[in-house]
Image (cartoon, rainbow, N blue to C red; front, top):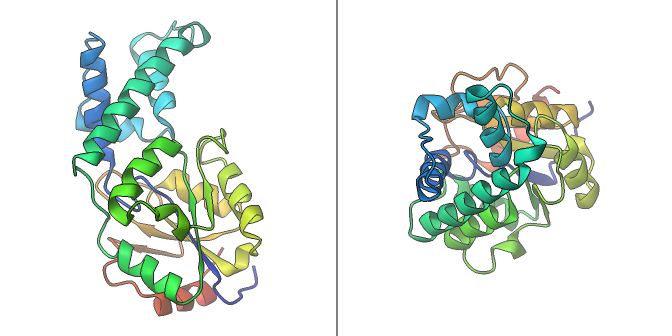
Length: 239
């Protein structure tokens, strides 16, 4: 794929912009308890459930693990109710200050905006989760920082399907060769790569074991990553 001048950065949310997964886990367990369920997800269990994108999908995956004969369609309403309560609890935890942006994220966003790059979000999480996180981290006018937001409401086919990335690219109006994705997981990497996008991976404790062999670069966080570095990597890297 031919390279071009870097014009846009596309960010995943959970695990990329912020270390949210432990808070999601706590919200799931609070929801189970409030609903009188005897489910308790441990950190190790959640590590494996994260192989599937989407909260409802993780609930279904776990339920099928403990009840292989489960009729998923018959329990769709219950799964929706569990997830809705979990989302409310998550929002409350975020609003209480339980989550902050990962190192280097805000500095890179500000540098990119000053340089005139377009910023976008491509995630499989819900609009409510995005708003709860970024309102607290970036302020009430956080939406104005992003030209495009692709999420679970606009792209129901979850990563590793590339639907959300194709949608974001079309809305941005920027060629894939002039964009760079920042992700944290193998599902995210696979989705971006399938859309022809180069991807920088910022690992976290839930994704260190993932296969990132197709990534442009792999770094622990963005604290020492500059726009000049991203431009060099994007021009010299593979996809």
